Figure 1: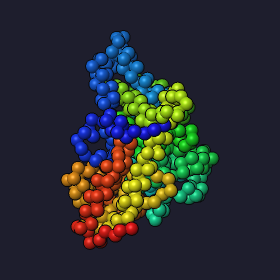
Figure 2: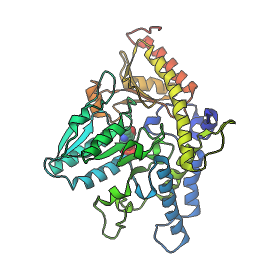
Figure 3: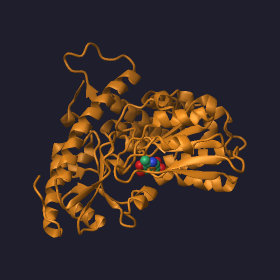
Figure 4: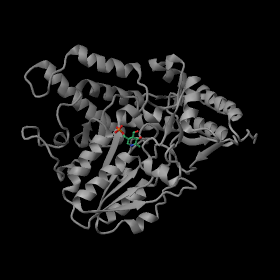
Length: 415
Ligand SMILES: Cc1ncc(COP(=O)(O)O)c(C=O)c1O
């Protein structure tokens, strides 16, 4: 498969404003196909589901199609795909529902690497249930989440192990299959935060050993819709608070109120867009038949493209004497967290914004990690690559940061 970034960029109208969108980790832009799918759903007419008329049936189809699309994206089954307003809201929902079964002295394991969305809901649920919270720590020198510690963290009282598939600031990808295997051996469930990982890698729930996998479509070229994918059999055993007349079946019983039907058309379009990012080259034997196969091949192409671009970005940053890069995990998403000597992260982000470069500063809700790294309260600067970024975006960031050396007390050193 080949990856043609020019073709990909042309699909995104927002990129035409000339800004370098290196803020994808906080939310991506959307391609025309997603915009059209959402507008098309409204134009065609939608109604609440379960009615007797065509518009109602159209909404039911949009929901069913979106479940199938997300199942293809994650290697899940449609009956296990739950939609909600955000990954945070869904994780609160699942933490609340799962913790009803916890008893005094039960344990949950959270990690210092995670976004707060996969920490605080578990801590608060544990407090209410009288359960104990155990922490997996980050090696601050490398940004790794050592797997070995889970052997002593997980025990027969462990109910849930919550861990990220990729850090939203350092990019670190923990060994989730090994961690989930330890959880399962102890009879615990593994809740994986896949929000940061999903746009960068082919995802397979079974290979990860994820009992629950949270993701958010707005991180992968879609609208603001949250997802949790799980084995329907596992969902059957969980009883959330819900309204009396609303469906009691799985997965509907986890979906409070009315789903955003038009946005779900956008979710399906986003998955189709990801499936088409890589295109078969001339030597490719045949276009893979199923959408799942196309997604696997396309995301593998995306991963290779992003890794190459990221190596360029990382190489440039680490050669600058006035820039400190945090984390050097062996396996990582193309996301970098750094500070510029003598300049507040917010001031760096403002300088970059003045030159049309979009990055984030602060802790990006990786609060515990930033505390462990000694970066609170200012955090650091985050630049994240996604498939629509190109060498020009990276070049602009590096050139501007190079210029900031003049404002920094540490002079630029040439490697
Ligand atoms: C790793 C990670 N987890 C969870 C979230 C929260 O996602 P949502 O905004 O859908 O609640 C984010 C958002 O930035 C994230 O990066």
